[in-house]
Image (tube, rainbow, N blue to C red; front, side, top):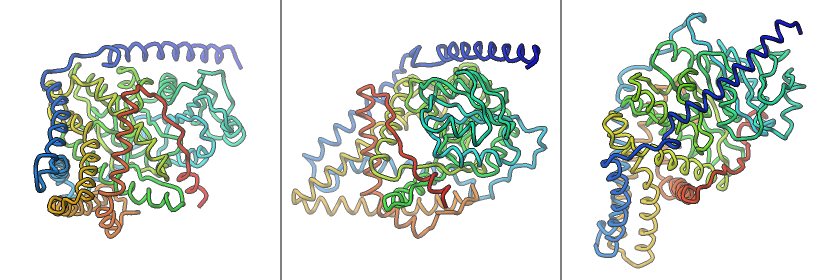
Length: 501
């Protein structure tokens, strides 16, 4: 290596250290976890009212007759129906026109993109995941494997199969001898957020995409993301469309069935909140960001169980504080498949972590709820999220009361309750079919979206999958109250079996 080249790498390493320090300083300034903001009176009232209302409605079960004795369930049904009505209203544009195709951008006008793959002991899924990244149309300028202290066969895989040579910890490797845009960054095991932040400091691209090691991109996914950033200068964060993939076992097929339709409805809901300029939920398994914006707000917070969700709150807060008008959106043309839980234990662990992280983020950002400074986000979206903190408790309480009435011999009450449940099931069925129709128009994705199977799922879900979801959320409450930070080990099965087919 010549002296000039050696000097270049020393300068680059020094710059990475500076950026790391800058990232930590920016997080300290931007994070309400580190510098708490006082809650607004309206925000405190909203959060308090949700809990008090649950207690009052639960008490009514012991004093009222007929369907009103099930007031907790009625409140749950009314709230969920109102949300469905809101989503339906906000997604009406998808019925009037076909979603616009991404323009055929010249490669020179597309922003450069780097992809970060945070990986801890993911040697089983990295080959198929990297193969998808390496065949991207107008693909990324950099692909960085942020190796979070792996102890499995990752080292052997990357050196022997992908032509990489390990550098010192915290130092970006030389490019692969086989794939010039592939790099390896080894960091001490500290969790996904720290691995992502370490990679951000060594990236040189205008935009950064985060992709989980168990997520398989469609061939034009990075191109669709780059085109979205090219067309919207204020865009700072974008989510792609994810399709869940489970294992081939019986439980795997059942969980994939329910989760497929759950993901479809969720992405339709994200489109609705995007139109209300209030989108908060993107999936870090497949998301893209303006790199400078990530640096400005301090990157990902290692103390949060759902670092992607918390980051969007911080980006939106920073945008309002500095009057930047930043935008967050879902890109309907960017698709990927992701490994999803295929058994009850894995599913409950995932939803426990998701909900505990959701509660963390709500608590840290409680000053945004009911705060008119944040527009629709503060006055509509975050009050809805405040209700969502208790929605699973309402749902489980309603089910427990229903069982009590059934086994307690309250036949009249039970008949009234099932009339309400029947009406809600009909509404859910209509929304299922509506969502699938819009999802197909918006994304062009038709695989796994049978209308007949969706109808069956709508009927079966209230007393099966929905209760399991709520149970996972209730466990999330316990995890949050105990201050738990462990993710739990997730077994990969869907993506591996997909590769074997």
